[in-house]
Amino acid sequence: MTNVLIWSPEPRGAFELIAKAKELSLTPVVLHIGAGDANAYIQHGASSVLVVDDAKAKDLLAGPVSDALAAAVKETGAKLVFLSGGKRGKEVAPMLGAKLHAGVVTLANKVTNAGGKWTFERMFLGGKTVATEIPTSEVVVATFPGRLFEPLPADAGAKGEVKKFAPALNESRVKVVAKKPRKESGVNLEAATVVVGAGRGFKNKDDLKMAFDLASTMGGQVGCSRPLATDLGWLTDEYWIGLSGKEVKPKVYIAAGISGQIQHTTGIRNSKLIVAINSNKDAPIFKMADYGIVGDLYKVLPALNKAIEKQKGK
Amino acid sequence: MVNIATLVKQSPDVEAVRIDPKSGAPDLSGVGMKVSDYDKNAVEAAVQLKEKNAGSKVFAISLGGAKLEESIKEVLAMGCDEAHLLRDAAFNGADTAEKARLLALAVKKMGNVDLVIAAEESLDSHSAQTGPRVAAELGWPLVSYVSDNLRLEGNVLKAEREVDEGIEEIEVQLPAVITVTEALNTPRLPALMQILQAKNKPQKVLSAADLGAGDVKPVLQRPSSVAPKSERKGIMLPSENPDAAAEELAKVLAKEGVI
Image 1 (tube, rainbow over the protein chains, first blue to last red):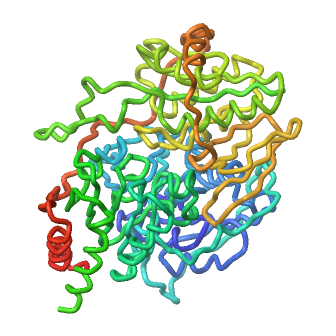
Image 2: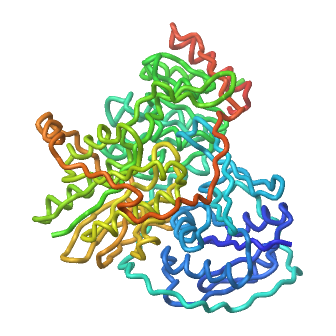
Image 3: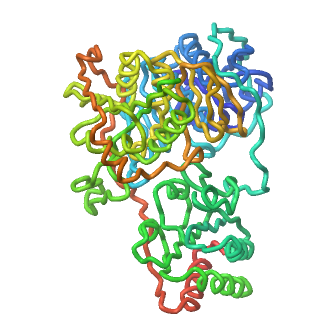
C-alpha cells in the first residue's frame, strides 16, 4: 500500500482527507503539529500519526511546516501529500513542492488513479473550464477544498501508531506579533443555504434593506461583491463574496445588481442554483445563471419578496 | 530605501474567452493579453512603499512571449521603474514550478532586490504557487495574504495578513517574499502623462543563458482544459413586467425545491 501524508491546520480537514485516502486504497499517515488529541486521527481512520511538538512550528508558518512535511515524506516514504486547501495549506503546498521538486495541484475537486498516474481536476480560467493535471514528479502534492469529502465516523476501538517526530526545522524569520479574530458580524455565509448577493446595482446603503428582507423571507443571508465591502464600505469583509472574500455554496444564490466579474463569480460557482437580476441584459452574470430576469432590482426584489411569501403560504 | 521586485503575469483576458460549443474547449483566438488583474494589487503595494521610502525602486519581472513589452507598459505607467522580461524558446515548456524557479533566478541575478511582491494567484490558472515557490527557491521567508497595514520600518516589513483562523500581525526582516490580496488596496489608474512616460522606461530581456537557467524540467502536465459538463440552465424569464417576472421566479424556485 502507498502512504499518503496528510496535514491540515484543524482536525476536520485531516479527517476529510483520511476518508478520501482510504477510498483510494491509500495508507493515511497524518502529520500533527502542536498539542491536541492525536488519537482522534486514528479514530477517524488514519494508520499512524507523526506528532511534531516544536516551538518553531507552533505558529504554523509555511517555512517550518513545509520543512516538517518534507522530512515526514522522507521518514514515511509517502508518494503523495494531501493538504487541506485553506489559506495555510495553499501556502505550504507550493513551498513543499519547491523543496521536494514536486508537482503541486491546487484545490483539486477530483482525484483518480488512471493507469498508475495520479490525475486531478481543478477549476481553470476563472471557472470557465476544468483542467486535468497530472504531476510527473516522484512525490505528488495536492490541496483540496474543505468539505469536499465526508469524514468517516469515529471508531473508538480503532488501532494505530501515534509517535513523536522531531525533524530539524529552520526558525522562520517571520514573527507573528499578534493574532486577532475577524470582525464578528454573526454572518456565516459559507453555511448559508440561501444567499442574496448585492452589487453595484444598489444606489444607497439603505437600499440594501431590500436584499436583507428577501434573505430573511427565504431564511438566508446577504452577501456582496467587492466594491460594497471595500470602496463603498457599506458592508464588512464578512459579507464579501469572491476570490479574496468568501466562497459560498448555497442551494440558491440570487445575484442582484451584480455584473458578474470573475473576481466575484469564483466565489459563487459551486452554488447549486444561480439566479441573476440585472438591468443590463448583456451583464456577464446571465451567462452563468440558471434563471435570469432583466430588470430594475428596485422593482424586482420587493416583488420577489412578496411573491415568495405568497408561494410559501401555499 | 528598498528595491522591490513585483512578479507580473501576462494573462489572456479571461472574461473574453469563449467556449467552443462542440468541443467545450476555450477559444483563445482574438482574446487580448493583459496583466493579470490581481498583479496590479502587487504593483500598487510596491509603488506605495516606494512613495513612502525615498530612494526606493520598483522592478517588474515577467516571463512570457510576444507582446509582453506592450502589456508590461501598464505596470510601468503605474510606477514601476524598470521591466525585466524573461524570454527564451527554452522556457516554452515551463510549468508553474519551473516558471517560479526562473523568476527566482532573475531576482538572484539582479542581486539588489530586498522584497518580492506577488499576487495571491493569477487570473487564468489560479495555481497560487508562484509567490511561495519563489520564496522557497530564494530561501527567503514568505508572508502570504497581506491584506492591510503594509509598511516598512527600516529593514523590517510589517503587515496584517489573513489566515484561516483570523488576522495575524506579522513582522519580518528583509529580504522576504510577500503575496497580497485584493483587500490590500485599489490599484491606481495611470494618468495619460504616466502612460506616455512608460514608453521610455527601460525594458531588459533576459534569456536562459543570461539566467544560467539550465534545462527546463516541468513536473506537472496539463493535458486538457474544457468547459465542465454541468452547464447552467441559462433560462431567461419574461421580464417586461417586474411583478409577473417575480411571480414566475417564485414558482420556479418552488419547483426547484429551494423555497
